[in-house]
Amino acid sequence: MVQQEPENDLANVMHEFEDLSSFWKRYNKVSLDKLSLDQARVQLTQENQQLRTLLKQYLDGISVSDEILSHNNPLFIVNNRSNLPLRIHVDPRQRHQVKTVVEAAHIVHNTI
Image (tube, rainbow, N blue to C red):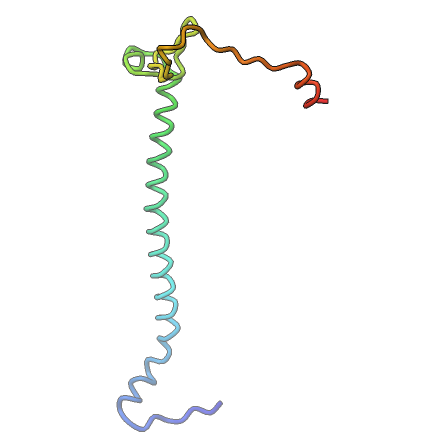
């Protein structure tokens, strides 16, 4: 491909800076990559904070101290009792506990 000589001053100046076009392409690509990495860093920082919170909750749940015991802890059970309040609705009209009975014929029929 044969290049023609520029005819006016502006064309001369543009022709001189034609070699910088590859630089600006690389510069723009690096700028976009940096922006993408910054956004990923923000997302990873937020995820890290959430994971740290979950880890602290787990470690608080498995450790035993006065501070931990003063709060409700679902993992702390002594004598088959937890310190969590029970949220079971009990009908006051019901005097005895209802027991579920499954007939042996039903079990044999459904398991064999």
